[in-house]
Length: 257
Image (cartoon, rainbow, N blue to C red; front, side, top):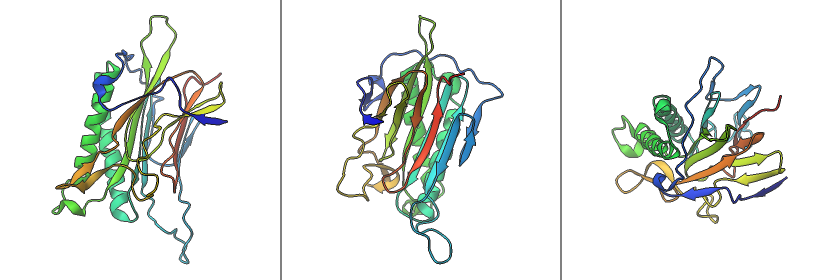
C-alpha cells in the first residue's frame, strides 16, 4: 500500500478559508459509541502503546504514557481527538488528559450548532482554546503546567442534492500528530496532515503545543492549521501519534454489508 498526499486534500490557516459546504444534521442513536481509552468495537478500535524498554521493576521507561484520545461515533458523524504530552512524566500526561477532556466537553455542547464546514472549523479553534485554558487552570504558577500536542477532527456527512451520502473530514492540529486516510479501493494511504512537522532535525520540537511555552505562558501555535479532505465509502481514517511512539484510532465509514 502506497503513502501519498491527495489532490482532494486542503490545508488552510483560517476557518473562513474552508469550502462553503453545508453539513447534514446530526443523526444520533442509542448505538452511538464514545471511548476515551483502549477498546475494540465492531468497527472502531483504539490502542495506545509504548515502545520504550522495560525497567527492572516491570514498568516501562517513560511511564506514564502521555498519549490520550477521544472518539465519539454517531450514525453520520464522528468526533476524534488525540493528544501527545510533550516529554515524560506526570505533567505532560496530565496536560494531554486535560486537553482531551476539554475538547470532548466543548463538542458535546456544540453538535447541533454545526451547520457548515466553516462552523466546524470555528468550533475546532474554540475547542483548542478550551483545551489550553484547561491545562493551565488552577495553577498558582502557570509554568507548573505541562504541554501537549493536539489533533482534533470531525468526520461529517455533507449535504448533497444527488441524494448519495458525501463525507468530509476536517481536523485542526498543533504539533506533530498525523492523520491518514486509508483507501481500500485505491490501496493507498493519504497523509491529510502533510507538512505539519516543521523541524525534522530536532525530535524534541513537535512544531507547536498547547500549554505554557512562549511569552507569558502562551501556547506555541507555529504550525496550527486545518486539514480538510473528502472521503468515499469504505475509506478508513487512522491517527498515528509521534514518531517515537504511536497512538492509533481506526474506524470505517460506509461499512460493507
